[in-house]
Amino acid sequence: VEVQLGGVEAHLDSAAVVAAYAAAAQKHRARFAVVDHVVSQPSALLPVREVAAACRAAGVEEVMVDGAHSAGNVPGLRVEEQLLGCGGEVDCRVDYWFSNLHKWAFASNSVCLLSW
View 1 (tube, helix red, strand yellow):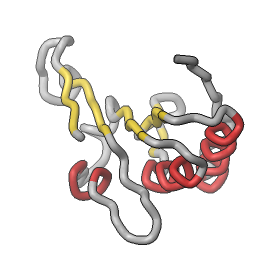
View 2: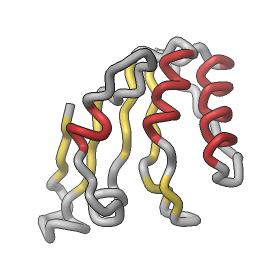
View 3: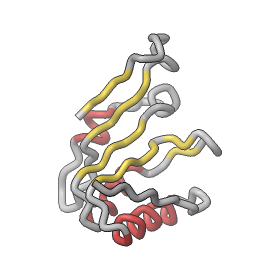
View 4: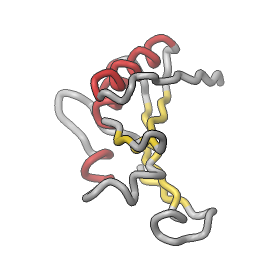
């Protein structure tokens, strides 16, 4: 197993973020991608469905979304409906979404939620 880290320096313009993920996936022939749902610095919501679609088009087999900051910051977040079940001509679903619960559910630091 080889791990490649692809930095995204796209100044958080949605189209540029999607293009940066697609380029990194193609360059490194990635089979698995991890995407932040909400970037903590500078506190921005990433277009994860579009990123997932671009990654899949570039050959990525599985996409995981780090939802550590989105659980309490994205109004009306419905993971199963909005992220895990996306059909149609473009495959924009994600395979896994996870979040820690100590920030939003007042659980202990070791408690995590994984949805697939």
